[in-house]
Image (cartoon, rainbow, N blue to C red):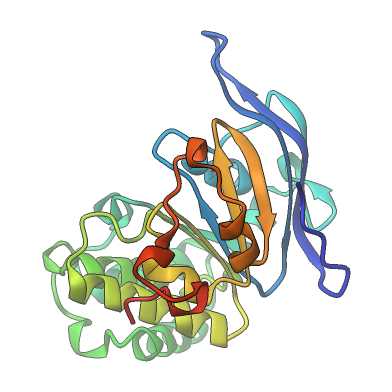
Amino acid sequence: MTCTDTSKKTLFSARALRKKFPNNFEALSGVDLDIFEGECLVIAGANGSGKTLLMRMLAGLSGPTGGSLFFKGKPVSECGKILRRSVGLVFQDSDSQILGETVEEDIRFGPENLKLPPREIEERLEQTLTALELTEKRDFAARRLSGGEKRRLAVAGILAMGCETVIMDEPFANMDWPGVVQVLTIVKALKERGKTVIVLTHELEKVLAFADRLVILAGGKIRDDGESEAVLNRLDPAWGVRDPRGVYRSAQDCTWL
């Protein structure tokens, strides 16, 4: 099932998307999915459902073995530099994204790699330090930050590069309460700024309140796609996704913020 919103511009469009590995394991099978500009999309699925692989394919880091995947109407395989400047990933292991010794050096890395003018780099640095509330941490050792702060730093680096789309893979993994709150604050702020936010998670109780749409991925296939409350009403236990409303009254209450 694919939810299509004709009132919004399509950012990504996948049709019959497949990924089969040399051992004949098909990790993604016939995925049909549209992602729209400016929406907050939550893709839920158990471990092994194909979420991370889908994220890597959206970012052009892994190619399909079947079907098609488009970014703003063009094949992802042909987007190259445009895709890298438009889509930023926040990996589950934030340490793997740290490239600078200090917070400031890490944020500078992307814009400097893009060879932007020095004045523009300074402007982007100050803007992102302020937006992600990292100004007081600018001279701190990046790897000594807390888990939540490292994810804020990853997003800061993405925004400094001018990315309009942020994809977060299991952003609450190994997070304590303060860390989860920091990540959710980022999601809320990105949504308010009109960014496209894609959150891949199995922890719906923490973030579903911010979702414009909920997609269920199980066994490499899209099982449902639509308004959060409606999708939860159709949940099949076989999909490995838990309905969080056992504790919360509705999907709109599902947040730790």
